[in-house]
Image (tube, rainbow, N blue to C red):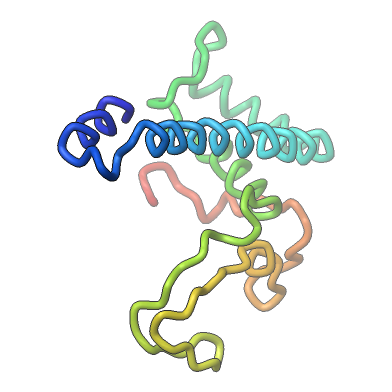
Length: 153
């Protein structure tokens, strides 16, 4: 990515200044570290409170991955139960409860409200993930493993 930014700096030096590139790199580093650690903490907390889930996840890892190997990115598709643990932790504890702002590109209606073009919109992921009309028992850590199958999106 840095190489790409430096290439862009060669073609557009007035925009891709050293300060812009440093700022983008800093944001990427902060976003990566400031989001990963709280996500892991919440996932581990959920697992500590649900020993049966830990047991089932361990069984999946033992059957799909050899004990003397670390899980690799290519192994993730073979671990649907582990994926559901990650999805459920992310649902309950989103890294960014308010998603990045979006600018409406056309007049539209959202939730019965007329939104004119050019309006800045914020999506409240936290509220959506806890909406009782969308989720059964929305504040509980519950896996929907039966909906997740290997090879399906």
